[in-house]
Figure (cartoon, helix red, strand yellow):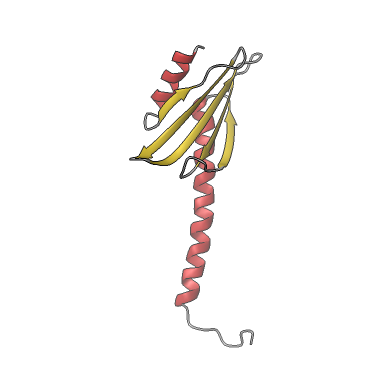
Length: 120
């Protein structure tokens, strides 16, 4: 796969990002960075690597949040670009559900009547 085919694959599956395919450092290796922005504000950064060493192709996707210098939040690998990106999305949805659950416990704790015999 060459850089143009890689860019086309990225744009097909993630058209909401502006993609930059970087110069290859080695044979069988491609990487690209995609950004989402609103005006001058960078909302999301996505970095995808494609390694083709040996028989199986491996994709690795990692993402960072708001801002240019934001830290990478999570990374996921897969045999296809779609699987790597789906793994990343599934991770964020699991974390969001956990946080949403704990936030609802706190909200319910504020609304509930005080319990008798609690700690003093």
